[in-house]
Length: 212
Image 1 (tube, helix red, strand yellow):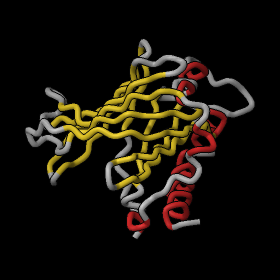
Image 2 (cartoon, helix red, strand yellow):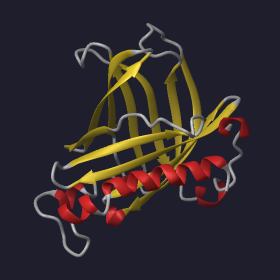
Image 3 (cartoon, one colour):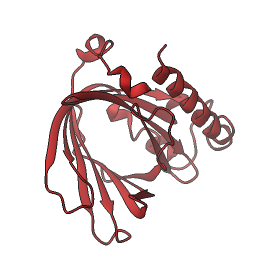
Image 4 (tube, helix red, strand yellow):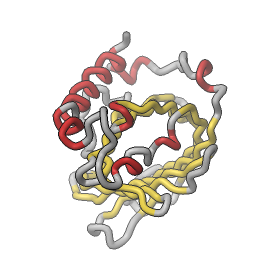
């Protein structure tokens, strides 16, 4: 097991421990369906389970009046955890000259009816993790927010999942430097389901320098 694998396992084991079993057991025991609308909302991300090809458009610089976009392809594999109250996806980003991976961990809180999403970048295996974005789905669109910093200044972060079908979906990230009054989209992903990826992506080559 390489450094990223060990670090990833330890990091997400600690995260999962912090949200389960105490919170999951008190709000939604696995032996019974949770109360209210949680039974439906806990399935919000079921559409993403499986293997996907992705096409990315990423702004070269964020909140810098930059209009240069970098385009590249990738893959995503997603699995459910904790009886559906959590899930994790493993992403491969085929950036020219620098293929790397990223892991997203999501956890659902039945009381608030919100999802929290954490992100781990293989280029920074020792962290720190970004603050989780939190939010929910309404009318088929998932919107999630967090407060973070960029170049030492506070920014508002927004994730949006939309255009969801059985075989396609769309994700985008935007930052705001004015508390959410205006937004700059800086990363867009379009996904297409591909069940043939299960075996093909097992041995994706990764530059070992990312794990030093």
